[in-house]
Image (cartoon, rainbow, N blue to C red):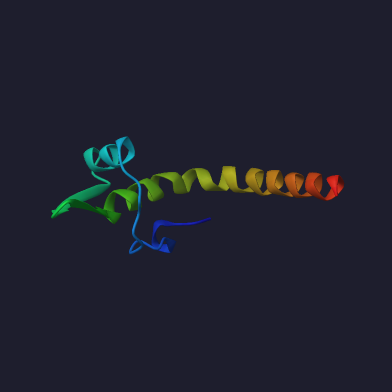
Amino acid sequence: MHHASDWNAGRPCETSGPALKVLRESGFATVRIDGARRLYSMQTAPLREVDSWLERFRGMWEPRLDALATEIARGKRKRR
């Protein structure tokens, strides 16, 4: 499972448009104008809140997702 702390947050991103607007308007990102560029920064507090809320569901999801990954791997091996 990947958590927000695992991401390479310092990496430049070439994304633009509606997704960034949604992130900004929902408090997950801030924007700073730098000449002709807009520099976005992710806000970790809202992500930690979401991660905390999702924690109670992980025990239910992870075994099923692991089982799905196993079945997908089996299918790939059979096709070889």
